[in-house]
Picture 1 (tube, rainbow, N blue to C red):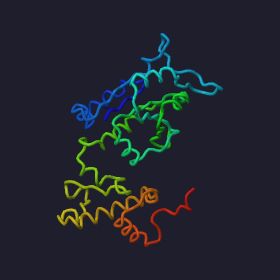
Picture 2: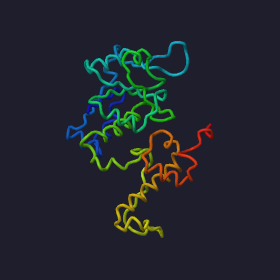
Picture 3: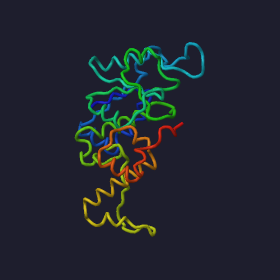
Picture 4: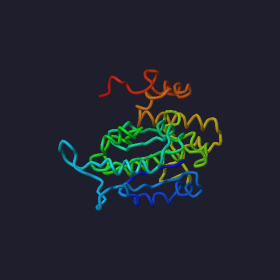
Length: 250
């Protein structure tokens, strides 16, 4: 998969690309990250890429000409062009799985008050927000997309490692333990050292559901849960609800 990153700060990606799993899969050519400096496509001698907004107001807006030039430099062909913005659709694991099926993505890193709407109208296929908060620029959001999508690409992570992760079945992942068996007076749950795999799987499922109810009950209303999860959920809640009461939400 190819990630084309349109950014004013390409240097901010260098350390990230050279470390951990991403660095290894780039070296193996499973993933490719192409950094495109938007300033290289500015027309004036000062390489100015922003200007004040029409209609007045605070801040600056990224100009359309450099962005258009950067996008056009990638050549023709169908590809998803993603603008990272707090005004976009909320990003989640299902979105990451959909993007992982693409061969090539273009990520536009916003800055200041955003980008000229005409770029969105002409080029952008997806407007994505990684959360209900505002960042100073889109580079951090782009790294989130790269990391969450690339790990789903075949050959990056062993498939069995992905099966029991949070969100895979609509619930959060169960608690994890490792050696030593006793730490600060707290012991590893006895069931995990019995070697009884069926019981361990049952315990993990139950604990994952309990954690979801505690930390992210909203997830239980968003997906079609499998029958095992529904059964345990009904046992935990007394059959009263499959999740939070929507009427209680603000």
